[in-house]
Image (cartoon, rainbow, N blue to C red; front, side, top):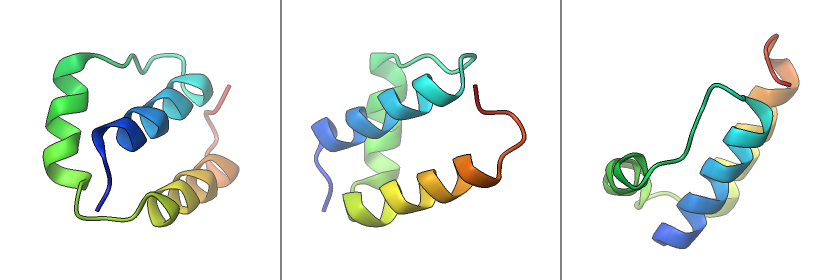
Length: 58
């Protein structure tokens, strides 16, 4: 189970790679309810894989 702090950490990484994404408390709360059941390691790996293959990271 992921903590809200871990989800915030992932969201900060998304903000680094995608400048149009902004972290807000509302987004953090919403995503926490969806992502809390997953592991940080799994989602971090998925994010890095997406960034590597994305045409739009910064």
